[in-house]
Amino acid sequence: MHRHRGLFFKTILFLIVFLIVSTFFGTAFAGQPGDTNKHCLWSIETANNTVFLLGSLHISPVDIYPLPEIIERAYDKCSKIFFEADIEAVNDPSFQTKIMTLGVYPKGDNLEDSISSQTFDLLKKRADASGIPIQQLSRLKPWLCALSLSSIE
Image (cartoon, rainbow, N blue to C red; front, side, top):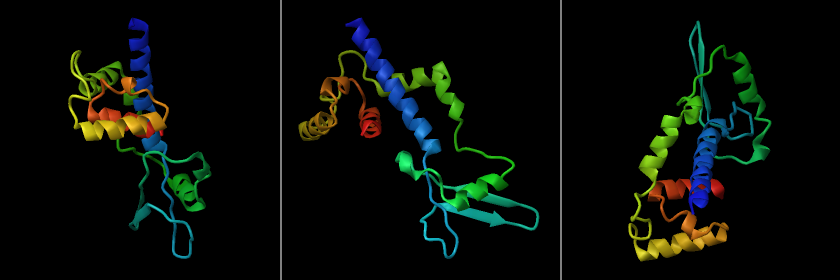
């Protein structure tokens, strides 16, 4: 039982890290007038500086690479790149502990008792369709369950 619990937590931790990393390396397509690509790249230009703002999707298919030329050109022009969060923070054990502390029910509590039976039935069907035993999700709070399930899909 202890071995399964460790595997369960490692699986959840992997999914969380995967989702966070995917968030920052997700895609946004950029374009200029005449460019046929859809995009989320904006630029603010002054006499001395240009600032690019690139929106992103949290999870994207692999076939988005290479990124459209306009995004690649924007990256090439940048001397500094800032992300909305510290990507390396996911490696910090205190971050991982916090996610598990906030996202997992204490022993004796579970997801099925916390949501309506109708919602739980829908979740079970979705989990089954994704090949995930509902027992692997039963200790997760709704937000972590949704995050885990959507990242697996």
